[in-house]
Length: 142
Image (cartoon, rainbow, N blue to C red; front, side, top):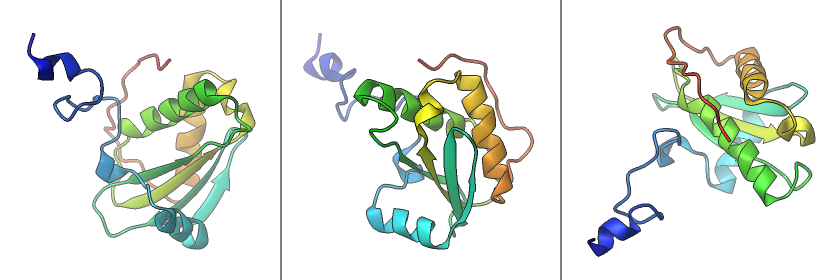
């Protein structure tokens, strides 16, 4: 086996991005970007998450996640982040938005479908319009 093939599954530059993950350009990563969304964004919340969103000049949605240690240990926090990211991978939005989702402590205790439904409803409340024809696939996120 070629050395690059052996490393392909462990985060090497040769590996393909997962179809379930968000591309890097669709993530909010810098603290200045988070601050801008928190300062000028519209807010809404549900029993599992807080959502802050502000329009951007890009043709696509960008997502930032904030999952504190109150949610649980590292394994639990990563589970919650994977579930939230999964909600956004299948979402079609009519124009560009920056969205920051902050997970609340109870978010790890609910099934994925309930968390997914709650996030989508909350995102629509802040003004993000999810277009019809969004590809919704039934799958289990572990």
